[in-house]
Each structure stands twice: as C-alpha cells, then as structure tokens.
Image (tube, rainbow, N blue to C red; front, side, top):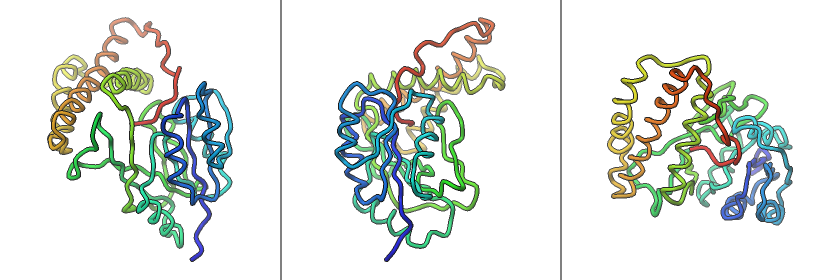
Length: 265
C-alpha cells in the first residue's frame, strides 16, 4: 500500500560509533539527510555509505542545527533522530504504516534509554517526543537545550519505541549534566525562578524521587540508582548556576558550551 514519502533527518558530530546502526535502521526511508557539524572521525563516510545526503554546517546550537537539517529534507514527512538512536524493526513497520493515511500533523514516539550497562527496565516510564511530523506544519522550539518539535495541528501517540544509546558511562552522563545545565541558564536570560537558594536545597531530592520512584528506575538496580543521582545533580547544577549568575552580576562567561554537538536527553 502506498504511503507518504519519508525523509529521515539526523545531526551528527563525531558519531562514528553509532551512526551506522542509526541509518541502517531506517533504510526504508526515501531520503536520508545527515547534517554534520565538523566531525573529525569517520562519521561522514559511514553516513554516505548508507546512502545519506551529507551536508556540513558549523554547530549553531541544538535547536537551530536540527531545524537546519529539517530544512534540507526533500519530503514533507520527516522522522527526526539523534545519531545515537535507532528504530527496532517493529517501530520501523509502525512508522511506515502511520504514513499510509496520516490523519494528524505529527506523531509522538516513545524512547527507551540505555542506562550505563543495561536497558532501562521494561516497566519504567518511557519518555515521549514528537519525532515523526509534517514539516510544513512543524518546527523546532528554539530552546538552547531540551529542544522539541512544535506542531501546528493535531498530534497523537504512535505505538513505536526508539532505542536511545546515549551516554555509555557515568563520566559521559555527568559531563552532559554540566553542559546542559549551562545551556538551561542561557535559556533563562529573561526569566529567573524565585527562591533559588531553597530550590538548590530542596529540588535535587524531588528530582531524584521523581526519576527513581515515579519513573520506575528503581527497577533498574544500581544503574537506575546512579542515573537518578546524576539526574539530581543536574537539577542542583541548574539552580546553582542561576544563583552564581545572580550574585556575580551576570559576569560569568560560559566557555565551550557549544564545542560539541551531542544528542538531547
């Protein structure tokens, strides 16, 4: 049965370890776009070997880089992936089926996380994001971090899971927490929450409880516990850096925040 043609869009930077699996999982696509931000490894060669149209652009920030990649797509319908994500076979089938007669402007998809040395437990809560959409009715949100696709029109959940390999060790996840907390401070240039000192004290514990208990990562053993602790540290850093900006009069300079392009959490 005929379906809407599909462009798969991926942004990359030194993604040689994962880009092959990512693109192999979407070989059914009618068009594959890879926008690279200056890789020094084999990323671009691997992408080209999978039939991708590869372009290069200096990293402009997470949201702007992804929007630039979307703008390179040939077809209206776009599947947006990170370079360390892949579609299991059943998810690929459901994406194709959804495009036979799409009755909405976008679809949310679930994402399963690799947590250090194991997949998150099956009964843990999965995050969901709009990843399959009609680009004539959608665009990136513009946020420095935790950017998202904003759709002008109806959206519904697609029963399809994206596998996200993410940071493979604690060091990588802590580094990401540091970088992302800096970017979130930039997103708050004109809005700063009240009671920063209280938030520094209280909110990390709330963030830990939400991640570990409410989202079900306690089922993941020590991997889930460590991930929850890092998540709580990230929550602390966001407010600590905002407080630092306040007491220093906004004179703190952020160095290297955009030196590398890495997937969103």
